[in-house]
Length: 123
Picture 1 (cartoon, rainbow, N blue to C red):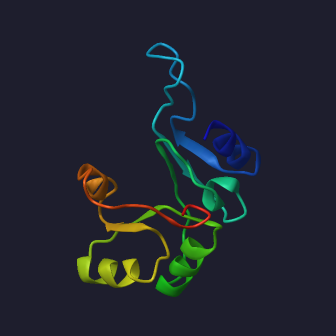
Picture 2 (tube, one colour; picture 1 turned 60 degrees about the vertical axis):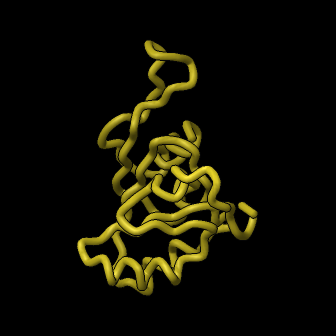
């Protein structure tokens, strides 16, 4: 995750908040991070990220958003964020990932008995 953030930064992304370790609370803690000016060529957009990083990238329409979301070798989990829940559910059905949540990031992982897994290289 740290190398993904650094890769994005060297390619022009801007760290709006976070972007560093938090050694004062432990060696494996990383500050919640928001990245702006991200492009789809950056590793942060194409690889799985196991940490508190939110890369933000604009898109022109729903089709482009889905195409970009699916343009990865990975597919463990995804989130769709929108004010229109019906639109979010429609988009979620088109995203290729083991779990796709609408306006949430952890609800499916809170039920340990429920099956979960990924697709593509995340299977």
